[in-house]
Image (cartoon, rainbow, N blue to C red):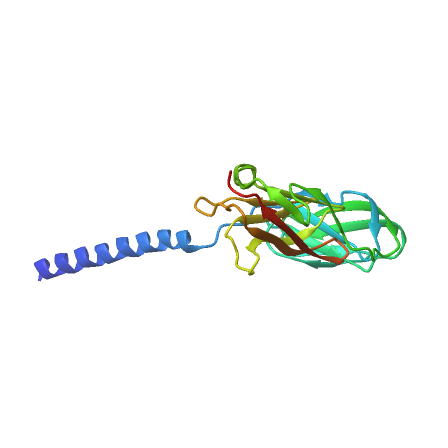
Length: 218
């Protein structure tokens, strides 16, 4: 009987110890507390803002739910949010609040008439209709396009038949770039088209189409 009791006591002690280990380890599965977010920047930071314009704000961490007062619709996830109007012309003091950290920040603008003018292409490595373009220079330095204002969107390098050449297209601020991917070099005596769509902060769109032809091989 004593031997049976000792065996039972040992089993009970082992189960109790295991329950303590499991209980202590359960906290590892809990989600960590979110890091409080702080305001980082806004585009535009201040100054003139079209009544139909867009403000992009960024934070150092995910801010959670963001609200804008007295006007503005907030959208987006992660560390970045966009705020759209319409905003009333005149002075605007826009206060942002967010739930992750209970933060707030105020932006100041002068709201102007709605922007109804689409962006334009103002320059770049090649122009529409260019001929005898050296493909070696393009392959080495890539292609750059400049726009009349800050835009977002996409551009791609295509063949005349509309096939994507496979270069990396990026649109950032007032500049669009096309970067060579190894093995996708452009050749001689070939017509290429840069195509895409970009839009400004007010949603005015520009259809990009720039055609150029490379020079014959020397």
